[in-house]
Image (tube, rainbow, N blue to C red; front, side, top):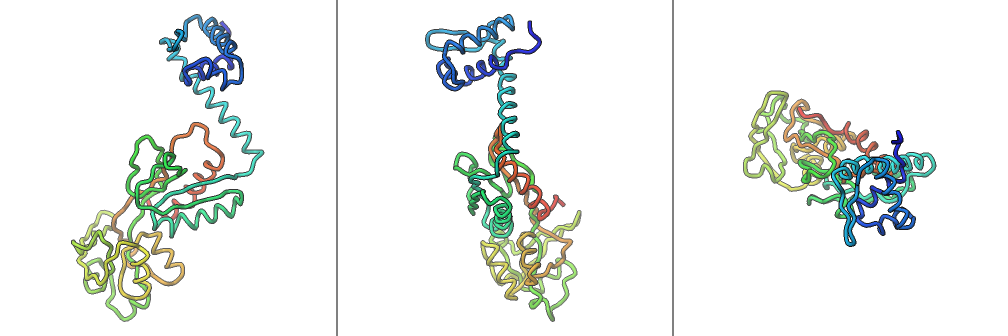
Length: 303
């Protein structure tokens, strides 16, 4: 028996197993059907066992064939990755990328990041969709999803990006001349801007390490969108509980400032989600590396 099996025979066996017919395998491999049969016979002779049971209408793998198949698949995937790695040195990063995420992430984090990625790689054509509905990457034509809270499908690859912590923000004009805020219990003396999750309880569960405090509120506005709450806070109508990446956007512009920065609420996990691909195009790998490097610092580990 030879030390190394013939790669062509293994690839022919993999094609035959995956496609289910000698004709289809021959078309994929670009050869005659008789050549596929010859390669399979040579592989069986080399291994000293029958791999494929043939009939006039079908073919099935023997137990030995089933044990060989994962190795043949690994060879095909390895050769495919070798081709991609070589092409990486010869081709530009180009083509289409379709990203789906939530409206807040799209507006305040993902959208600007994708604009920067497009600037770095002008041949990329990037589309960012905003949707609170659970989109399925791959099946819906979307390449990647950045999801909040849950993945939704265990068959998908999910990379942990961190947590979005809701934090307190207010405009300097609102805070001027008003009572100091040294603890969440002081919030009751202030006007607050709340989202729909708190319209019935009228309380924020604030966390600081192991400490928790359920702060009673005096809300003056309820909305289901972060931009509405943020703009209302900027205008000076009260204190808003916003995702950190939303509030920090306006802090950099001098429009808001953080309140009780050591306290936060509602730690929500965020994932980069996509279908498993054995051989991933370079544009996908560049996108994943870019998002992991640029978005993670704007999020937080779980407190």
